[in-house]
Length: 541
Image (cartoon, rainbow, N blue to C red; front, side, top):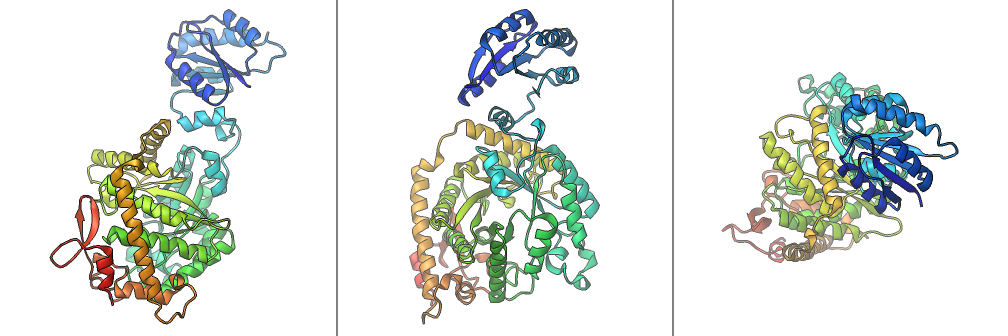
């Protein structure tokens, strides 16, 4: 068992920080002893000889001027402790740290700016850059390395390439993010391989304009600093297998993100036909799976963004995961977008996400696992920044009820403008503090009876929808109707999968009505009377 000796030296009597550190060390299995406050260096030397600690944790929170003679005396008397391999660490203020660092006594200096994760990493013996190494550059290893903390992701793409490159350098150097999601503009997503079809007036619309593979590579090069964050990017809306190759070869795409039913005529993101795009999206899942790249299918929240009933969103979550599994995906990133639609109450939101988790993870076996990724819904953010920060923090606390592996932070400013590096770093700091508070101890909201009741109902409703989709294969032509592009597109055209915002879209039914009642999004009839999922499905011929 490793031993830590803690002490406040010189005239310092501020013991709260050192005691908290020693308590945390005890939980990590260390044997600890605290000498007290205002301890002279001679007494400390004697106690070191008696206790024989592996680590001496010193606290000093007075002025840097008064620290200098104390630390110089300590350095002189350390030399006399021959034969003892001791690591000296210091907890102090920022100004004292600047003085202490020059003396070369302390292996690590904590100033109170560190996250609980960094302190836990130190006590666990994990090597991060600050102590001589870098975090893993593989997604699954990085998640394991970070536990019990989730890894943090944020979307980033400014309207010009140079600004984006400089922003990535700044974000990586901050060591706050584990994953930077590249946000390309619409021209990149739709016409990267057909530049002659681009509208130059739309350059930078929605993200960074990337016009060559070297542009992608320049983003990766910019990220090779700080904590060396992973990079990832969406799959594009045309030529999506070719885009997967570009992403793998130039940014070492941490995971593939592709929809099942979207980025086509359904949402006007491209001119692809619905059935054709489903087949192409499946082929991208398969292509990445064959290369061992994790896959995220952006599906369920697209239905909620268009105000589909909660039951359809839950069914879509299962359908997406099932398709990924059948395409050979071994590691599936299940994204759970909270606060979508924004009128959803926290209680009903948690129930909806719990229903999704149970159905998605029912697919687990020795060849298929899922990683939970949570995020706040963009439309839930007010334009007032103070209110938006409150939304970010409270949503994060709710998300932590799922014990996510990845937290996708959405900057508080996004309702007003695309996030700049300083917006991202501030938002991540808010999020990290909420995560620390949760991990320190938080009530289990999943035990709420309203949550449990609604979750049970949503699972039953979603399974009815899944069964209805299977029955669209009237003549038994498909061994698995749930992965047939023809059957899935038929489910959308007939309204088995439907959303109010699809009204007028030729590829969809778009006839469903929904209304929020008690915080949940329900299907209603023409008189705005709630109807059950069974009743809705029975009306579909």
